[in-house]
Length: 260
Image (cartoon, rainbow, N blue to C red):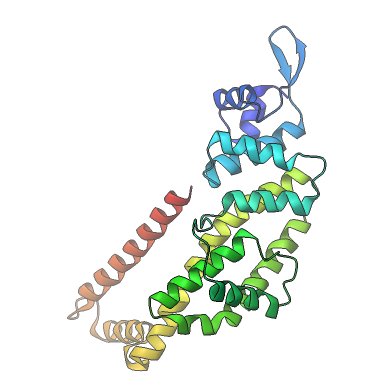
């Protein structure tokens, strides 16, 4: 295919494709004549992978080049390559200072209780977990750590779903692309669902059924039907509901714009 078709297939502008080629992120095409270069499916897959790292993962070009060099190392199996990409996308960097021994022991106990024995004690993820535990302790919120097994179980279930989805891809670049996009947007999906669940459970526990928003909306709509279109309060209630929907939609759009 010509570069114009490659651009149409991947959504990457021609100028950007040429830039990626110059930077060594994408291999050059096969020259078929004077000023004519042909590209294949491998270029489609690689461009999608690079685009996911640059746009979705928000990694600088130098970091993308480093990640691609590591994942293409023939000594790395797929599990190791996924680990490289995962660490590159990890937003919570390991703390500079070593965590307290007690916090590190607590972090290690959490993962070992789940039977997670593949991660070494020196791994930066464990140090980061220990740092979070230490911060909770210093803020007087150590009781949150008592729920670690529930968090760990939820994390394992999500991770299992993640890996099963990756296993449905056959090509290495496609797997890496799905992992990168799935990690960044999957984190956003999980965090948003958690916030929605917090709204639901908080209202259930602290407000009670009388203040449940769904019941209020049902009551308002029932009253409006009986009062008719010009009934008192109908336009105000509808305007408030519409404004709430618009604010919610705008908030989600801002979140997605930041992510991308």
